[in-house]
Amino acid sequence: MALLSDRLADSGQREAAADMQRQLVEARQRVLGPEHPATQNSMAVLISRLAKLKWHEDAVHMAQQLLAARQRMPGPDDPKTLDSMALLSDRLADSGQREAAADMTRQVVEARQRVLGPEHPDTLATTNNLSNRLAALGQHEAATDMVRQTLEAQQRVLGPEHPNTLRSMNNLSNRLAELGQHKAAVDMARQALEARQRALGPDHPETLESMANFSRCLAKAKQQDAAVDMARQAMEARQRVLGPENPDTLDSMFNLSRRLAEQGQHKAAVDMARH
Image (cartoon, rainbow, N blue to C red; front, side, top):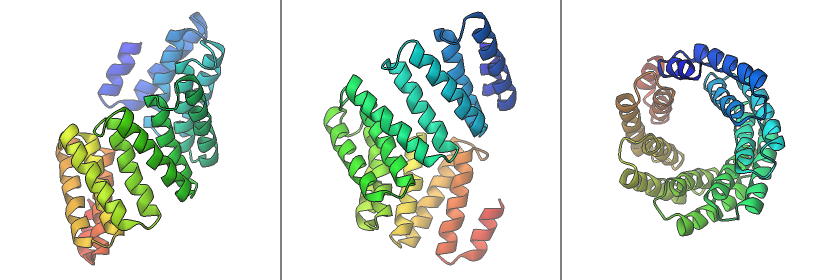
């Protein structure tokens, strides 16, 4: 059943894959019990399947069940339990429950600081996520301070071109833009893009994410021509690498349409929006 669920997902049959995965979870709960590692692993996969379908309420419910089971076994401070707390915070954020997501993420940070230490990679990754949660609540100064501290620690502990470090650089550029510090935001976004091009390669999905982010920072800084050019590059690269129907590709088309409109090219913007 697990293999069939994987194959269905690989072939793009997401609803069938989620249905098969749900049957697997129910069978393992019945035969092995909810606290067996195989059952819990199947639940984690099901949560991923549900999230990709944007069935957020179901994903949150399943994530809550998984966290409750792991708190009983293997226990509240086990790394897998902390992973489940982080997973629940992500699903809460997806469902628009911003305050609950921020509260859960804060609990994960505190637990990982206590169990793993304040500079463990997982702890630092979670503080980066908490910065995003705070930004979503409009707490931009606190969010910026948090991601800047996280970035400094990651540069020291992981190195300047570690993927987690680069994620924090990307996020810091967004936080600076939200504070209106547009020159600093553009500079940081450019650094993040160049570092990802070196460390991950020009066609890596996270490099393409940085291209899109750089375009947005340029637009907020009123550098419209450069913003349009970068948005077009991001769209074309995603079409080539990810395919024309990928959600990130479609997002890039929407962003290019916005950039064209901001530049005054309204007919081109409308044409792009219609594709």
